[in-house]
Structure formats: C-alpha cells, structure tokens
Length: 124
Image (cartoon, rainbow, N blue to C red):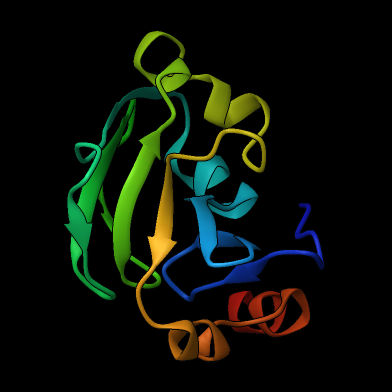
C-alpha cells in the first residue's frame, strides 16, 4: 500500500492535499482496496459547505456503500467530474482520483490530520 508523505490523512481513510488555502480530498489506497470495485461516487455540489466530521458524499462499491466524512471544513470549489463516468479510476489511482476541491474554512483543522507515518500506525 502507498501513503504519500506529501498528504495528510484521517482515521476514516480520507486523504487531504493542501495547496495554500485550498485542499483536494479523496480516499486512501487502503480504503479503495477494502471497498473493492468502485461503481459510483456521490459528490456534493459546487458551492456546498462541508463540515469536518460530517458526511459529504458516498462511495458505492461491489461490496458496500460507504459514507465519506469531511476531514476538514470548507466550501466546495470543484468536484472531480471524471468520477461520474469512471468511478473505477479510484481503484486505479487513489491519490490522483480526488473527489472534491475545497476552500479551507479553518486552517487549524489541518493540524489535527495525521501524517503518513501516523496513518500507517493507525492501520496496524
């Protein structure tokens, strides 16, 4: 499994890529592996507000439907429309297949995220 050190993580198996006051959010390699073949991704609308710890979407796989919990709060700037047509792309490249891009509401929430070493430890 791959857990890039350039990203932040949650124990709920989401990753966050910070770029200034914006962030990309997706699911980890571990999550996509556990879910199996991803068939559908339900995403919020652009301009929706997402709140840390609250559901912002759903990933449906051949095994289960799993709620996506927001790792940080913010306004949705963009959704990854590629996942509408190719949800299985999350299985192929979990760290390129981001789900949403947000404007970060509270940068202090970023400090609460795990680095790659702590995420791997949490999986053990």
